[in-house]
Length: 402
Image 1 (cartoon, rainbow, N blue to C red):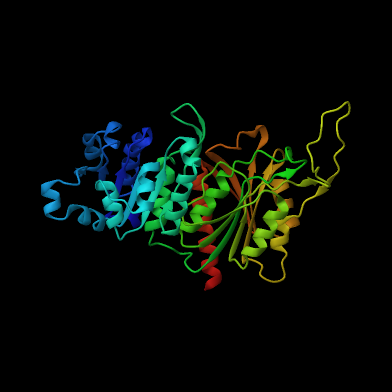
Image 2: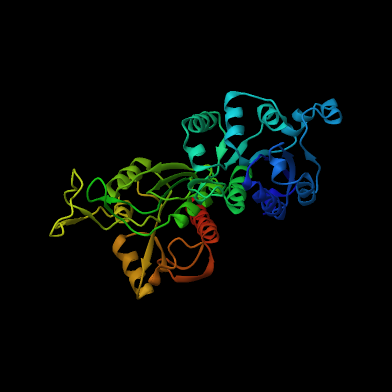
């Protein structure tokens, strides 16, 4: 991306097994034309070497706060000011707590306290460390102070446990960096609303009706719109996907909650309804857990509100561009065209989900249905689909502005 040429980030690598990802991160960032200078903590050096970081970054690695050569030039101040963005990957619980508490006792914490540049952290730690009230207090304090976060993700951890705590993948961190440094922002001054993930409709306090949506596509779209400058609200059902950088995320569970959050987020210039909203809900959810007996309980289902159609048919505050998604298992194009007409939306993004391979995958092949045509987009990553769709949105809204 040309917008990153001749610009520099300062990468702080703290102590954690996820530090190995920082090597791939440096490679990916430099592939974008962005210069990288690294700070390596004492604990971080137990996982990656200064030589590895220096070789990949093409620059010296800094690790000693009291280096006579560096501090003669007030090195920690210079490091904090010569970059446009400070990225901490991995960001450990220890380093987060230090910055939240204003502690500066090594080069990394001193640089963070001295910087006047934006800070992006990619947390990585054991799930219980992440959940600990002390870490959550530090997280809340840092967010209040303006620190941005990407991740952590949920999954298998190096310690053998499962849960939130995995450092975001390098591609996601690069996308967040792009968002924070982007100067090509054709959607500046525009407002975007995106829905993502599944909804959960309760049967009783334990069980619910839901679907297999991972939220990957919707979250990617929200991030792509934000990177183009849109003030983006993401209304998301339960998902393991981290909130995209520079996006206002609202977490809901039911379709009714999603609709209420969407209507509260209006007005918007564009609404992208990528969520897989449950079509039905239980008419009367049980207050107590339904007990297993001789006969299965009889559930009466009623139709949920149609969020896409509701937004598309609004008389006031209708977004200029309303985009829906169609996940079909047969007759894809016929079903997508019918949905496009039935819902009253402007565009439909249609994909074939027969066999279930599209759910949770990192790539997909889609058709973009408009009033004029049906375009087949070849198989690509969901991030690439999101970026292509965001570009089309920017072009369409740019024409409407003219």
